Each structure stands twice: as C-alpha cells, then as structure tokens.
Length: 394
Image (cartoon, rainbow, N blue to C red):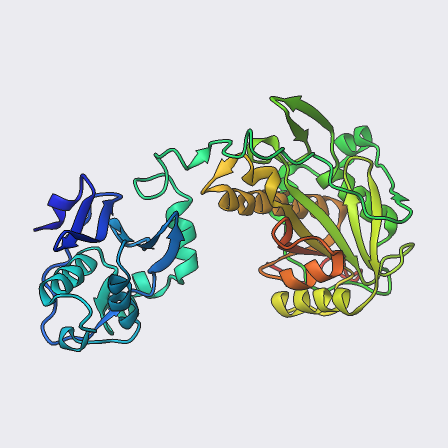
C-alpha cells in the first residue's frame, strides 16, 4: 500500500481482530521510497509521543500522519528504536508480519528514519531543533497546523474559564509615580521617523558617570507601554497601548531590573501601565543580579543600567487563541522591541534587545506561577556615552 492510499481516511492496523494502531492522515505526503536494506533504523529526532485521551499519539512535524497506539506491544517496538536497530534485532512482541507492517508505516510517515541519514547530514533538517520545528509547523496555517477546529481564534476556554483581567494583581508595597512627558511637545520636537529608523543602533555600553534618570525611565515607559484605554467587548477587556498586540489583548508586562538609575533604588519593579507607576517587586538580591548577569552574557555587554524583563501573562492570549498563541506572543515581543528601540533613539538613549534570558530566575524573583506569567524577552536601556552620543552598535 502506498502513501497516497493512506492520505484521505484513518487506517486501522490489527492482528487477529486486535487493534494495534491507527494512522490518522494530516496531509498528503511524499513517499520516501523503499526501506533501506541493511541500514539501522531509528526513531526520528522530531518524533513526539504523548497521551491524547486514552491513547498514546506518535507524531512529528515531518510526518504526513499521526499514529494512535492502541496496543502496548506497538509502543515496545517504537521504544526500542531510540537506538539504531536493524529489522532482525527488533523485539519479537508482535507477529513478524505485523512488525514488518508497523515499520513500513512508520518509515512512510517519516517517524522512523535511517540512522545517520538526512536528519543528521542535510542542513535543511539539521538546522532545526525539534521544538523549533514543532513551533514553526503548528503555529502556521496549513494542513498539519491550521485549517482545523483547534487552531487560531477559537476562544476554546469560553464557558470553562474566565478571561484574565487586563490589569494583573498588583504587587504589595508603595507604588512610585512616574514622570509624564508632554505629548504635544514631543510631536513638535521629536526627530522624524526616518531619522529614528536610520539612527537606530543596538548600543551595549552605558555611561555610569551620567546614568539614566528616573524621569527618563518614566518618559520611556510612558511612550512605550502605558495603557491609553480599555474596552470591554464580549466579556473580554481589550487594551489600547502605543504598540499593537494580537487581538488587542496586550498580554505583555514590563519588569525593570534596576542596577543604576538616578533617583531610584536598585532592584526589580513592575510597571503598571494603567496608572503609570512602578510597583516594587524586590530589592537587589541574587535573583536580580542573575538577571542582569544573564543579560550581560547574552548581549556581550557590561554593567547595563536597566534590564527590562518582558513577561507574558499567557492566559490573556492563550484563553482566546489556540495552537498559534505562543507564536503570537513572540511576535508581540518583536513589535514591542521595535517601539522600544525607536523611543530610545528619539530620546538619545542606549538600547539593545537581548536574545535570551532566565525564565526560572524571573519566577523566583516575582513569585508568579511559571505557567501563568513568564519571561519571554529582555531589553537593555541606559544612558549613552557622552563623548560620541552613542557607542558603536548594530
């Protein structure tokens, strides 16, 4: 039986009336050709086995079908393929004909591959880590990702869970009011959009002899992240901020980690965009020092004055969007980065987006639940060197 014959409807494999597994087509696949003779076979490094309902599902972003396992003996054979094996060395837990059919199906589905072949030797596949290929595959429209009832704006949680409010639970402690710039003056005096875009650089050196001030921090946050208004629609609070967000849900929150700002104690704060205030989270401690150190290592920088941890309140967006929600969060982070770069350039400040950070340490510092609110981005800000207005950057 060829792949095309399996591409339209589920196909159950059984032995003596006992169901073994079922192939569930996701799209039409290309036949990889016959099994290689004498070669070791191994489970694809992109394959994932997880529970779905009362069955185990074997799937891969490379596969044209999913395999729902009904019999533990099938899983025994699949599990043995974590090590490269020839067909003759497979566990004898099924009749030989059933094992042969299983391997043939897994091979056609690219859930089993030849050891040392294309997944390890070709750049087009070797460049992908399993989780990155999974995210790319399942967060995009297509037969395996979108175009089904469990992708996109499904509002799957409606009627089961209440949507999260737009404003998170505030941290205890006395909030700090921040400076509010004159928007009319900024409209009149700011550099042009073209000037900002052309002058934008990633600047990793800050001037500690003339550090960022708390008023500059307040202006920066006001221009980037303040809440301009909220609107209740279909029971969900939608938010208006200076940058766009998927579904106007604005799941992102900003946590300034302060090393040195004139007029502000060192430590971690949460920016409340609804009131334009800083809420103290914790003073300088091992967690805040680690977050700054992680930013230094990721950016190749030294002594950043402020590290913004960009956190996502996941439920704000994942309540409404399914399968592609996390990818949408990362896109929102990118949009926010661009706004932060632009505002910093207009203000003559040194800014630099950071490629990675420490989510566990953020959780330890804030006490927030890892699965409810977590770090998804980092961004450095400080005063630019005075001798040339800006250190070399890209």
